[in-house]
Image 1 (cartoon, rainbow, N blue to C red):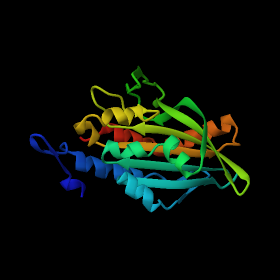
Image 2: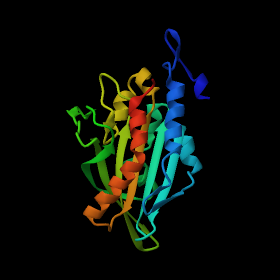
Image 3: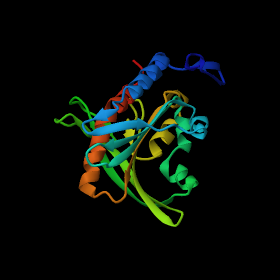
Image 4: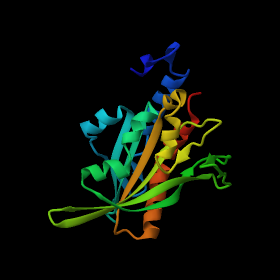
Amino acid sequence: LLGVMIATNAAGTMRIAPGTVEYFDRVKGTIEGVPMQSGPWLGVEIPVIAAAQDLLQPNKIMQRRYTNAETREWFDLLIVHCGDVRDMLGHYPPVCYKANGWTLGQRTPMTVGIVSATRDVEVDGTDNSSAAGVIEAPATRYAFTREVEFVEEQIRIINLFALPKSESDVSFGRDLSLPDRAGRFRSRARLGSAQVQIIVPAEMDAPRRDEIVATAMELISPVLLDVERGPM
């Protein structure tokens, strides 16, 4: 279906940019290629609910739980890639988690490392090139709580967005402002966007949480870089 996506404008029809179909296929394949294992961490697929499919119209969704075979620690990993950036605007932790009974507490700006070959990358208007081959990308950590049968549950969600690189915009962002900006321009909107969520237990101490987030980011860095690369 991606091969026949056509939009109508005042001048008649506007087709998606050359190479976009191949780009979407490439990103889908990269998501499907995210390893199921990293050291002691073993992943299990989590079925995606039908409502999420209907809301997002995704090119690809991947949702997994990784469990450490030695310590029994866990983290959940969610990657969503949409063919139209505007479809992503309804999928955002402060919106969708609150709609499912979670209460949002603190939100904390942070950075996460995208593992890459050394190169110059601009994120949120700042040069973030790194000799170590790690791009420091902006993200947000959200604290959520809810009560289930008189028991309080707490989680932390690390969230970021990725878009294809353009001359006039940045590729990675910590909130909806990045896809919202791209969604104002039809040509940019129809190049799509990706969102990543890394979910960890709230009781995990900060140094260990940072280690686990780094493990998750290493797993998904090829996806984020492929999204940033855009059509070729």
